Amino acid sequence: GAVVSQHPSWVICKSGTSVKIECRSLDFQATTMFWYRQFPKQSLMLMATSNEGSKATYEQGVEKDKFLINHASLTLSTLTVTSAHPEDSSFYICSARDLSGYEQYFGPGTRLTVT
Amino acid sequence: GQNIDQPTEMTATEGAIVQINCTYQTSGFNGLFWYQQHAGEAPTFLSYNVLDGLEEKGRFSSFLSRSKGYSYLLLKELQMKDSASYLCAVMDSNYQLIWGAGTKLIIKP
Image 1 (spheres, each protein chain N blue to C red):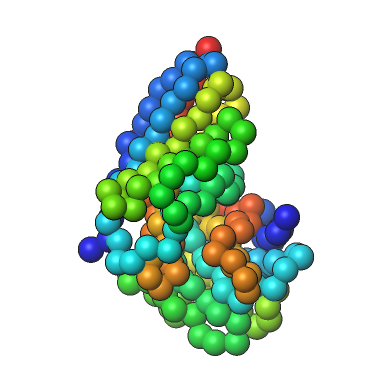
Image 2: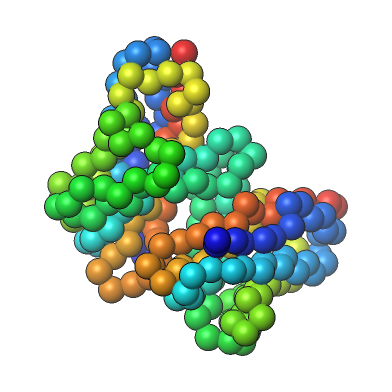
């Protein structure tokens, strides 16, 4: 089956620093990747949708200058949280959709803690 | 607006059957997904319905009625490991997934 990896699995950083999270589709080409954020005991919240080679589309209320998304290839998308603050602490999950299907394949998630 | 409704929490007994309902109102419809999510983990795919009717996959079945904007996930022979959140999601006309808030299922011995 289709596998999506994320790196790192968890990260602790200091307030004001930037953190980059990688999302890779390992055995398929992902034309579209999605970035979600999930706070404890809440549902997934879509942050942005990125298509390979084009700018990401951000959901309302998500600051594009704070959450930088790059989808440079069909197998890699990155999310950079710039100038992180404690309120950015959350579980960040990416998913990828291949050329042919509707299903989204989820990565294992990255738990970010900002101190 | 777009809306997905499902119960917040359900409790069931090991070995029993439980049905988790989901109703939706979306701009367009390109299928309905059910995902399972254990605490601290990413969602995993359970089922996809795009036509009316019942899809059976082992202990799990999913039903769809497009005219009613309704789906349910049926879990049989419940096991303790089935304790998780179950997320209903509808793909709209733009092929974007609209997510429900999830149903936390608690299995008791």
